[in-house]
Length: 211
Image (cartoon, rainbow, N blue to C red; front, side, top):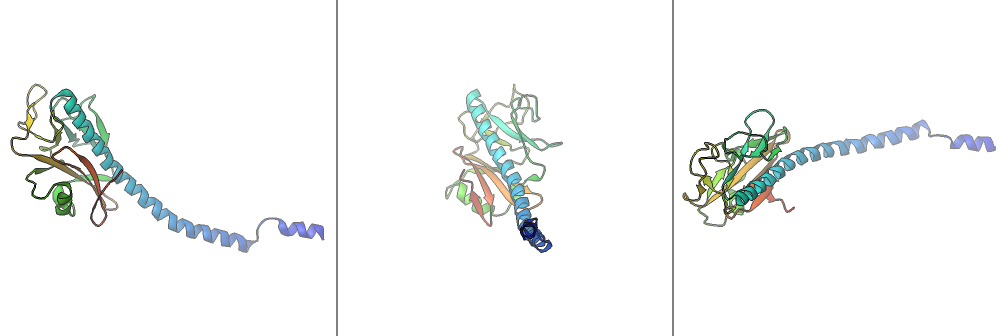
């Protein structure tokens, strides 16, 4: 009798194993899509956050050096954004930079959703500030010596020239948009005329990142 009792305690029956495997597969079916969605969201949000941090670097460097600096995008190879220290319009050794995930694309403002709503949230009612698209090569996100967004008055031509950047054409602001190529979701980085840098995510409407 004792040997029989021991034999009944050994291992699981086939039915019990099938039940456990079925439950595990069901849980896996729910968990994997959520994990994949989280990974895509992380890549999009990470790219926008990195761009926001780079914009902060541009602002800090401009104030520190008492001149303007811009955040520019590479046009070939790995997607990168960098601070154009030498003002040559191309990435150089020593330029602060950040990588934009290959799954994420920088998009023109004209193709982004809900831009009128986003504009109303980042700019006060009646604002006459010029809102520049930071994805445009000729209008990279730029800060002047006072830490305020501005637009260079001449074309980039090297460190010895084109060092004037002011708001002679009026108050300036910037925004730049990102889209995940797989999920289609959007993110944005905005810079107000006062130099406030904010990150936004589109979830049926633009939501400000509070972190």
